[in-house]
Every structure is written in structure tokens, then in C-alpha cells.
Image 1 (cartoon, rainbow, N blue to C red):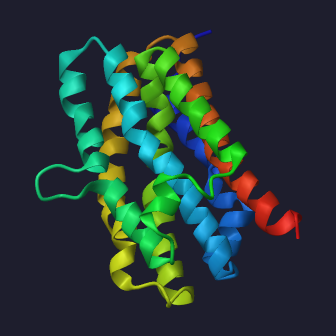
Image 2 (image 1 turned 90 degrees about the vertical axis):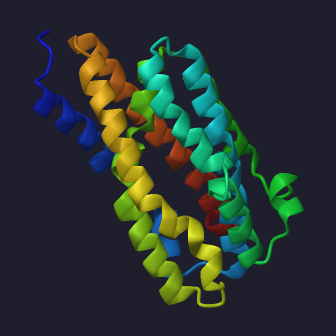
Length: 231
């Protein structure tokens, strides 16, 4: 089978987001419509934190599998963005502050007190995927960042409109991510377009992105089952 052209390949990747990105999940709709209780929002923050704190671990595994120095030099910025460096507290610290803003303690988040088993399973599966597959498939899986800026912008607006009891400063993570997600997705897409040259490699990249969408969707399935279906 002939490889896709760059435009066709990009369209195939973006089509995954149109079909499978978790902005379409019922739990996400409830959150953006302001229909979550304080306790339900706390549960989302606590479970999402498990994903957030594993992102730099996932990226460290990707770096360990990538033999290309120039890729590693640029990709390492993602770890710094989450763990923090210099005067930048990093995304994980900002998420801890979000937790405090919704009424959780740092121990609640870091001690995984509210973590659902299905969330752990989904996130661990993603970390294991990146740690066991070719590095470029790990890059492809990160391309959910293509769809993140719009989601984050809408999420921030929804929180400011519906959850006014949260202090504005606690929403710093949502404000900081859109430009970083745009930067990261531009870089990731350029790598995938450059290194996935055969149709088989392109298909594996699309499958990796689809798997990542499944990981994000499964996390919201766990929350929806806990908050909605079980009541």
C-alpha cells in the first residue's frame, strides 16, 4: 500500500481526534455545562492528577528510547514544563494548586486517596505503551495535543462561568497550557511526518494516537460510572 502524502497523513491523524477525542465524552459535557457537584469535580481533579504526574515519567521513557540527540534536546522541555524549573513551578504544581482550589489537600492528590482503579489502569497502560513501543509511536500518541488548545480554552471559560467558587488563581494550569500544547503538537507532528515514511509506519502512528484517545476516554468512563451511573 502506498504511503499517504503529508497532507493525507495529517488529515488521517486529525480525523482520529474528530472521532475519538475525549471532549465528546458525556462526563466532559456535564463538566462544561456546570452540572457537576463540588464532590464530582473534586473526583475529576484527583483522578486527572494521576495522569498529570505520570506525563513526565512517560516522556522520560520516550527519551530513553530515542537515539536522536536533537529530538531529545527539544523533547526534554516537556518534562521541565510539568516538573518545573527555575522560577516556573511547573504543571504538576499548578495542578496541586487546582486541587487546593476545589477543596482537596495535597495529600489527597499525592496519596491517591480518591484514585479510581480504572484510572490507574488506563494511565499505567499509557506509560507502559510509550516505554515498550518505538519512540516515534510514543510521539504519535502525544498528538492528542493537536486538539488540546480548543478544549482547554473552553474548559477555562466553563470553569469561570459555572464554578465561581474556585479562586481564579487556582485555574493557572488551564491558562498556561494552550500555547504549550500548540508548541508541542507542532513539534510532534513534524517528527511524525518526517519519521513515519512507509504506509505501515503511518498506520502505526494513527493507531498510537487512537490508543491515546482511548486512554483519555477510559479515564472519563471511570468517572462517569462513579458519578452518574452508580447513582
